[in-house]
Amino acid sequence: MRTVLLVVLLLSVASAGASKNRFDYSKKRSITSVMAEVEAKIQTKAPLDAILNVLRDFRDSVNFEQVNHDEIYQIQVRECESEDEFRSKEVQDAKNILRDSSAQLNVCQTSKIRATNQQEVNQQQTFTAEKHLNMVMTAAEQEASYFKKRGRDYEDALHAIDEASDILAAIYSGSGSFAEISRVSKVMLQTSFSIKETARFAPILYAFAQLASSKDFDETSLERVAQLLETLKQNIHEAYNEYADSNAQSIAAFNDQKERIGQTLARLNVQAERLQDKLDHLVQCIGTNSAIAQTASGKLQRNQQLWDQATALCATFQNEYNFATQARRNELQLVSQLEEMVEDRFNQVEDENHERKVRISQS
Image (cartoon, rainbow, N blue to C red; front, top):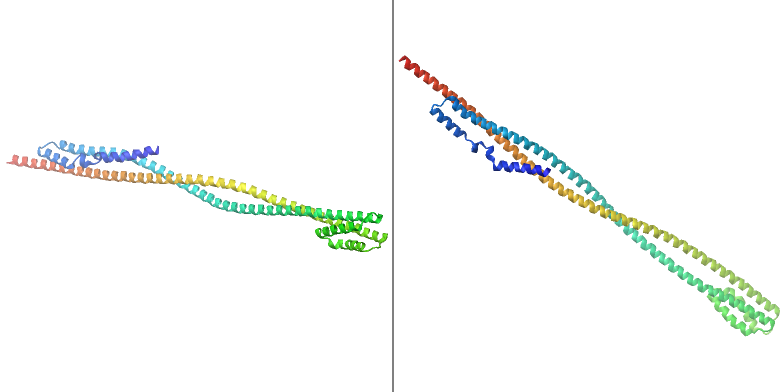
């Protein structure tokens, strides 16, 4: 609809330019020709009414043209006012949309930068947590392997103590050999180093050495050595149990640490998903508002140009109307002056004719 109105305005100007003679009195009619015609009628002594009719026809033509021009001008004024109101609204709407979309675009771009920075921090924290978890898992595996080996060492030590007790009982019954004591002593010494309990094994190893070097021994000596073995066995059992308890505490601490790290990673993963969703939304927001801003900018530029063109056209209409109206007023003033001049001339001629008749009658 607005395009049609603008086309009407353009056609009006084109029509005015192509057929400017409608409002240009100098080309359609000539006051000089009118004056010449009036002068000819005067010379031919035409009646006053005939001469005045020429001038009246000219005045009527000017007035008729002015009325037509007034009607066209009013149409143009209404079209210009309508176009001005419409383009003003379109320009303002485009400015508002451009302002709002640009503001939203700036918010989305700023938020995207902040979310990207948060995502980088989240990724770094996730990497650190995963690295920590791997270190904890590796340490736990190493500790489990070490506990397993140390457990076998404790079991070997207890087995050696039991074997020594059996050999000692065999010697006590007369079926054992001190050579077996020497062999098991070497095993016990080796296991004492493995479980780092050489101080506790020292008394029994010393007692075994005395038995092996002594040719005479009694039941009391064997019972004392047997009691030392029993005490050693209890001590090694207690040490083994303490070591197992310590390992259980380590496992519990590991499981607790593993759980806490897992919770941290779960929280970081949830946050990563939320940040990615937010970034996807912000990217969409940036794309949408960029498109809106671009469209609004194009609309603003297009409607501003059309508004400027319409304003220039309407100014042209106004100038042409003012110029043509003033020209017609000048024509009407000139016609009025000619009418007065013609009437004065006729009155002068009548007076002269009357005086001539009077002179003739007196002579």
